Amino acid sequence: MRQLTSLDAQFLAIESPTTTGHVGGLAVFDPSTAPGGVVTLDGVQAMLRERLHLLPPLRWRLAEVPLGLDRPYWIEDPDFELEFHVRELALPAPGSDEQLAEQVARISARHLDRARPLWELYLIHGLPDGHVAVLTKMHHAMIDGMSGAEIMGILFDLGPEGREFPDAPDELHGEQAPGQIEMLGRGVAALPLQPLRMLRAAPGVLPHLDVAPSILGMPGAETMSRTLSRMRNIANGTRDGDVLERPKMRAPKTTFNGKISPHRRFTFGSLSLPAVKALKKHFGVTVNDVVVSLSTTAIRQWLIAHDELPDEPLLAQIPVSVRTDEERGTYGNKISIMIAPLATNEPDPVARLMATHEAMKAAKDRHRALPASALQEITQFIPPAVNARAARVALQMGTRQGMRPLYNVVISNVPGPPIPIYMVGAELQHNYPVSVITDGAGLNITVLSYRDHLDFGIIADRGQMPDLAMMMDSLRGALAELEAAAAAG
Image (cartoon, rainbow, N blue to C red; front, top):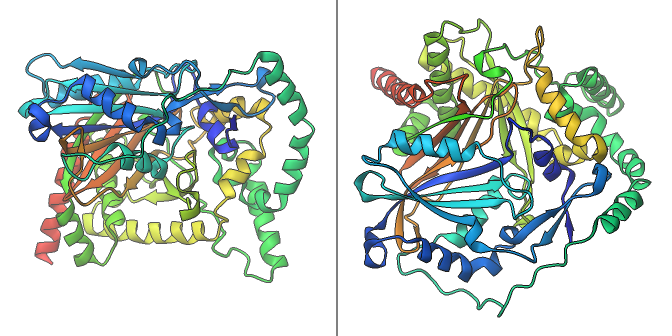
């Protein structure tokens, strides 16, 4: 058995009847390069079966500790059934992008079955141009962005002919599922260790309490964090208010910062990566600065269209991988977060980009001042028995009357392969991420680069943003606006 880390368990803890904890992707393929020019369910299952021994998370099943006395464990599922996880469907004619987005939204809104390994894969036929799609759902407790990329590296090939893999064992044996009495015993045995774990972590954790969303919303957490950070700076002889100083601004409340429903909207599309790189070079910024600025413009346009643009900037949560080379293949979550202001209140597109550049630079400076393990250690500070409740309460506090959200939106930019890749012989055309929304942050924009384009996957609460599709039009308009400004300058 393998126990979940406290950070992995947080992604289980946030789940509720309206919140899911899985992430995934919508991969669109051209089957003309596949054998016979088709992609079949049997072919996908055969490919997975051949590589399953190299993908241990796909066989992990949860074993929970009664009463939440300790963090859950992963066990090798003794009853693993590949056919349960790999499914097939077809869009009705004409098979438009809008129909595909609707299907993704509906599938993404459904929780994964915790009695099974926490993943699903859907082969979707009937797309425009004869393409097929593969929609994946994997629980965030199992993977983060980088470990998800490692799984992609096993599922995808560099050519349509595939590749050779080490032979799988004759049979993959699961573990005997532990009984409730055994798991209760493990939980009780762990209870005396929890205060010791908290005490060991306290000196490094307390000054950084406000980087954990599950704690940040709790009354007094930020004040304590700032005070202890200043005390540590003074003790170390550094200037009070050094780069560890947190941003003092607060997130304004918007329509997409209330309590979410169980239902989702999804939209997707692509922008030219060479065009973004040209803007990066012209304005002396980074690709990520341009991506965040374009996203900021699209959010600003949506807020203007709904007559609710705040006078102050919105705040974005930006996940950051802290996985080292030595931690490759360990799966789970090795991440931290940055909180950065979005220049939604800046009307000029170039000024908005430069403000984004400065905000991202400041956020990176603050982030570099934190220990890489800060978020992991901070989540250990919450006793497992109250973990789920604390995580949900913190997210919900910003949705209450008179309270401000912790942040407004999640924006994530993940690098992908610059060369063509294939699955079961079919060439990947696009890979649109499908991520998570929560109470207080009902909008998520995730971007994955592939070859010469940036693939955007945008998910939101169905009721809060029923016209989510306009976001992609706004992103394209924002890119054109910056290109015109660059040409004029």
